Amino acid sequence: MHKPYRLCLGMASANTSWSEEDFSCSICLDVFSSPVTTPCGHNFCRTCITKFWDEQVKYKCPVCNKIFDTKPDPPVNTLLSQLAAQQP
Image 1 (cartoon, rainbow, N blue to C red):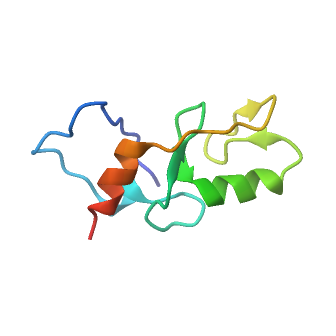
Image 2: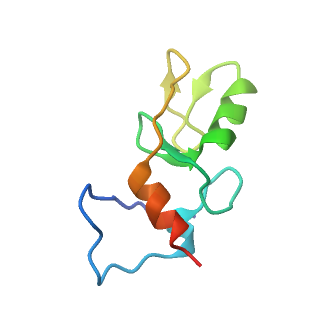
Image 3: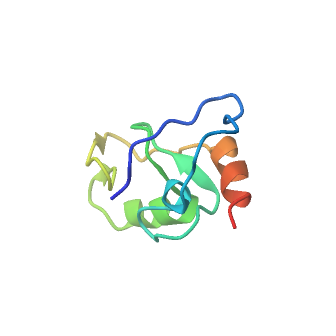
């Protein structure tokens, strides 16, 4: 189960402990690839969330089930992308 966390716009502090779970897509369960953030604040690989929404009748978040009126086009989360790339 994912623990809620927030990423600041600044650099993460040196004493912050990150687990692999913090950098894993809840759809494919792998480390993020081109991570995007949905309007409700959840992160997914761009390919995973796009495929998920293409297979749905309603556009919703797979984590919190928030329904979106139109298909979102979430931007790449560059900070999360950089942090995920540093994971072993």
